[in-house]
Image (cartoon, rainbow, N blue to C red; front, side):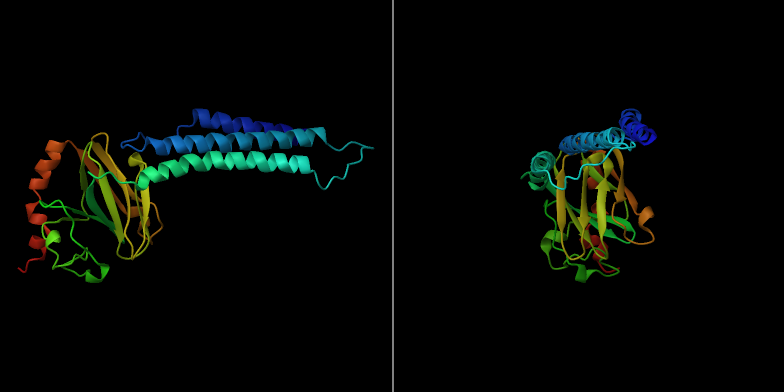
Length: 267
């Protein structure tokens, strides 16, 4: 009886903890409210299953508790029960997967008017590359990385000459404008994550991953690395500032000295 009561308390306590818990996600700052909706759907499905299983265990412990003279019935198979469990489990899994597949399709379908930017991860800092006046990013290759070319841009690519290089600084984005973030690592696995954006993606050496988002409100938000990348992993942080379009354009004009052509020019 005591064990059954403990299980009931665990189930009810878990629900109560969720309702009054102060640990909840941060306010959203992008268009990816669909991510929140998918998490909520998954939470309720798994939460209901958890409560049902725990309460069922409590019922079984109480209902079939040991009593003198009672003999247990041996029933190794029950096809009806197995069909029910298989069907309910299948419906639950499908209900969790379907929203995720829908959101994933949106997550990788980039709007045509999105602006390309590049985020480069390396132990243990973030660097960024923004398109210059031509609106295009030049080509890059990790094999080109050197002391005077830390992001590995191809020197003979005309599209990269006016690219703005921000090494270990602050990323700035205009509010209300879709952005395609090209993600690249030049050493080990990293993961670019801004909690308020609800967008994150692994950065794998040797390949370029991406996601897109539209910032929906101005402010300064913290960038985290969500992939263990070495002893300095906890300190691999940065900031992204979302500004009005006028503020962003004014800031971009101030970055004329940070183009790849200027930074790589011989002294």
